[in-house]
Length: 261
Image 1 (cartoon, rainbow, N blue to C red):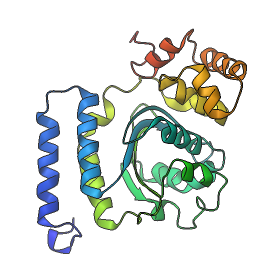
Image 2: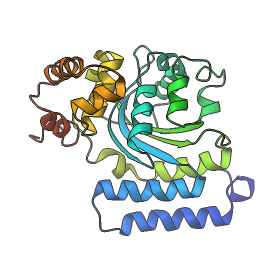
Image 3: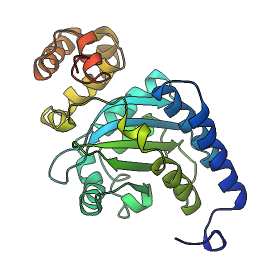
Image 4: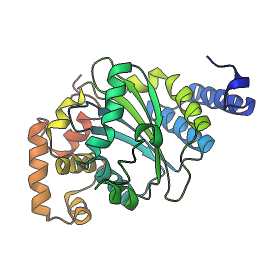
């Protein structure tokens, strides 16, 4: 490990990181509260505007899939555009390099957009307009494989017009997020996420919005579809995950198998 003299981190950075971790550990809240405290503090340290923490399936041979979002710094409109961007079919090519690296390394990795996408595939993809609608200018991701399959994934973002994350900010992010394994492996669903990849991108977007608590009319209005179409998508999603209502679906992805386990 490099000494602090050869590191982009300063003594002040280290002190702030230790203080933040101490605050998280000592806080009286539940796991969700501790995640939010950690991510709010991290965003302040690296000057990020928004964040998400979710389960994901990253397989080089499959489209990326995400569920169980905890997030901060968003309003409904920008977050829904973010979900559309994440579930766009062209993101498969953008994420393939990171998926391959995660499979090869098999341990927690943190990468800036330029490290994930040196060829600028994202900026030239059909998904990019959705990222712009979400007011996202740059990305950094931190992903930890889970023992039962899938991964715990964190994304931090800056608004359009802001500079890319640098080496110092990536180092801070990696150290903080890799030193809290109990925040990755606690309180996420027991079920592996591979099932989500079997859904079409539009279904995955509706799934995420249903799990956000949006009703069908709100989803239909945002996506420019009829309420009947959203009803149809919802039926497919409920059947796929063997639930009978939106409440059961939300429980499935916040309490494991509907709260039964």
